[in-house]
Length: 420
Image (tube, rainbow, N blue to C red; front, side, top):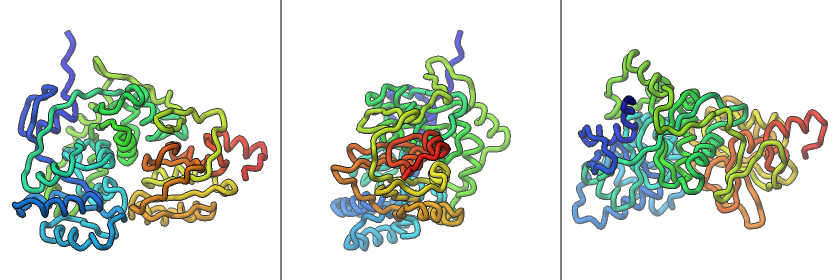
């Protein structure tokens, strides 16, 4: 007789927030979210929509986070800031906190691993890498949450994916996300909810787990990584002073060991399995997966790269201080201001600028590529025809001027081939 599988992470968190013990799939729960995560445009839409409500009292507005994505017209800033001031909304449109809302919320200490997060777009899904559960909501849902506490959710059917082993050199969260997507059925995987476990996931740092879940979320897949000791230590260093969630007791040593063991436990019955060593460099273009290793791909005219500090380090390492291919433009956008400052301190931005790159401020919209141009991006915010790749592939492609893997670029250097 087989041992029953422990409850899925998503079901456990949702039931805990609803004060229930049943985790039956399909059960309807009234969940009290911890945070509503909105960029500047979303914040504006919510504030303007609340004006239509007869009841102006919004007692739970302080759970909202308004993060300035740099796209809010000046004429709309005053009413949003007034609302934030009246209701105690933290970090509301602060210029020092521009960037991806998920990154800013974590770096400023406003997210915890057991939180339920509500948001408009896929960016909130990155918080699944810390163990949080991200829920999509529309404008009416968020407006009602500002005045009430709960949000109706059905316990979802969760697929558990066990990733074993270590990722090969030059691969990272992007390539792993594409491999998980293919395992789940490619373009048919949209709408799936997955829990990622195994030593292959445990080997990733929390920032990389966020990148992994964010990429899956952008593809329509909700992903969660159960938190371990590494997650709790990482978040403790980012706890915001005075944050109402900061008084939650931290797990003791024994509890952290149990969390570590649960994350790396062998796969259970019904779990999907993925060998990390089989993950290959790849690119995603309009729902089509393209192989990158072993051959030079199509020519490109622009590379848009960036993200957290780990991605910028890998980008620089892959470029090997080589200049950009002639006629190619490289736009580098750190995920938030903290990453920008850290990349300056480490000399990463200086290296990239010397190679010919241009800096795009965090939170600033990146211009869309022209119809006759092809470009590589490291985050799924581009348009049709863009090639989504990992940071290492982006760096090598920027040097060679075509889609290529870093080892092929290095072999060309050894042969003395001119790369410009």
